[in-house]
Length: 468
Image 1 (tube, rainbow, N blue to C red):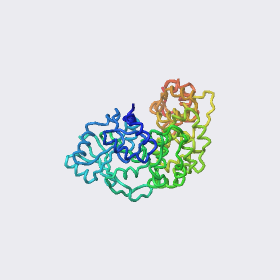
Image 2 (image 1 turned 90 degrees about the horizontal axis):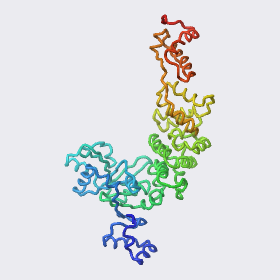
Image 3 (image 1 turned 120 degrees about the horizontal axis):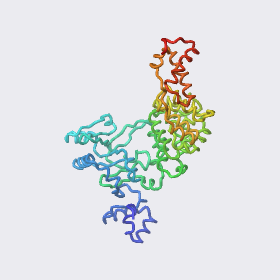
Image 4 (image 1 turned 180 degrees about the vertical axis):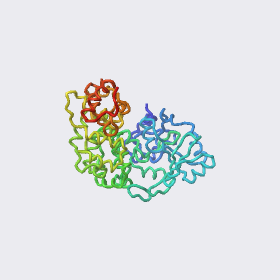
């Protein structure tokens, strides 16, 4: 039997009947069985104290020398320390967490006093006003440890906090039930709002009242969709009332910084059900508050999403399907502050996603690369995104196998043979490059230099010096 059902079979048939039909008596029954030495309970139980222990390979892998030192330190000083939030969720899904966040009953001042007494350096002191202290253990590992807290006042972005030692109060201020659990360093899971049961059911819901949680931090609207794409097994099984709460509060996203918006939106576009979730978000009126047009091109987005290649599109390339022109790309960029690479990718996709008729279908895309004024590697990646956007898998495969040739001439070689400098040199290069392309990139430097006198003559330019 798995860990979740361990000891379940030891209950008598009478006990099972009581547990199945008298849910209000859970706490009394569980307290009796706890005294009998049972360490694990049935997963459908939602309690306000530890409900089970885990001992998985992923959990054991967390215990580096630094974490072992940290755990011992808090224990010696009499403070509780538990893993919090997303790392607990990942461990329960048998996923190795990328990041660990810790919660503790110790206040920031108590932690600083403790670490100072032990000669442990602390970094990133900006987090202290929110209760976070970051010790660097053995001068190798950093650990973010945050005091349990409650939000006293919020404005939809920031919160004034008050420290507490009540684990449930801290869990109550978190966004989703699946992110509200704690895990002690002996493997004991504490679940105050049914997050484990929701995780088993792949159910994504807010802790308590959805309106209240959203109004504490409007970014939680996007976090909801991100975690839905990560956790849920079907594209459209949202719990009743959630969409209504999101629609009522969508305008609050205007208070959220563009960088935070894009951080979440990018992950939504990279996750499962990206197409379905984006259309749901647009139907709830979220688009204009995150930099998208009032009337985005949903029909084009549908066409792109339905193509097989859309599942591996860069998030900016997929999002570009909602944008009709480069002006809309720049308006979105001004809201969310894309990187220069992402901005230029969006502009490139919108400019080049249309048909490019040619006897040689690959040639127009090759020209985009060889004539690029930017980084060749970037341009080739952008062309791949355009071909995926268009759903042209055959041409994409051919293009990916194509090695970008190097134009065999440079300015120094041309000037040595009489080409002018300045703008004239650029014109010479462009003309010779056309000949090189028409030869399927086969002409050598010698072949091209033989054409130079003719090119200069057509330009009406006299050579700077007599050619050999």
